[in-house]
Length: 407
Image (cartoon, rainbow, N blue to C red; front, side):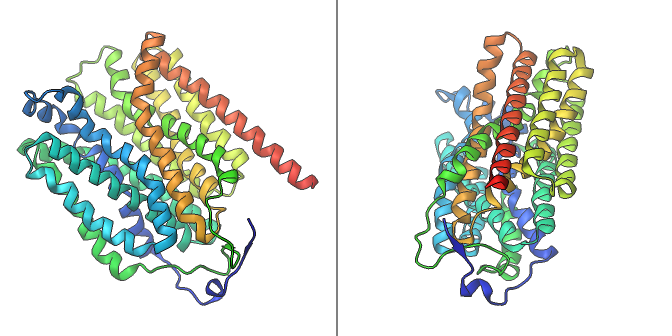
């Protein structure tokens, strides 16, 4: 696709700073809020709706549905972003998110709650797509862009830990109470109205040539999206399975202190990996992606071959550090090279791919655990797959780089 700089892009544009970065990072935490806040009250929900047919499946879907909806609707959000603009969609969905998210605080019907969670997922698809697109739009310099994309991983990872603790604390008052936390999106949306603006481009940005119809650049991104689906899967394996691995070593399921400590250490390692990207982001993706997948592989293989709690802790730290490095590496690989007018839809498809991987994680791990006969072996198999994907991506990127140099 040919590209050039449009007159709009040549005009003077506003320069984003820390305030815009903070607001976009805060907005990026909303999908995390949707997926983890209410996990501590799932037992209460299961008990409350025990008499509803199919409750044993429907109650866990309260957590799982938003991720699936994000995977389905993010591409549509990307289309809207490119055609109608970024800021308006973000503000509308931030307010809608508060309404849909708090609805279960006063609902009593399980089907109505599930419908509200579908709406939450639709809002999250738009919020995540726009926030990521605006980070790339606002911060053109590679160093600043990598900094905020790395911080996006750090912020969302740490937010997950905070939201789980907050949901557990509020759940003491009943399962309705944690849902009121979704209203926090209003407190973020109000300053967004005044601090954010609709970007028009920048002389350093690329643009689709005048008169050229904007299309999704499938030939350039389809392989990257497939890798991102696997990346979303490998990223969430230990987030979902860590507690079961710990219990599998003989730790009692009621010993939430040890289970929570392992999860917190892994979460911290993910955040450190994201921070590392702010410095390592200048490395080529032919190095970053194999390194990130390789660290995931090493950590998961440690969990497989080193028995006991020590193996799980060490393996989780190594793999989670790789996951923290992987997320922004994938994002910049797919989104950063795109032209301004196609960026929203590409970001939408990347978001869909990553969250599809997240949604598939418990399904695929259930199959792997059943086939291999042990969860730790299933995790190790994922590690082998991560190593293969990392090596294949690295080899393909290096071959492409050599071909472009020779040409």
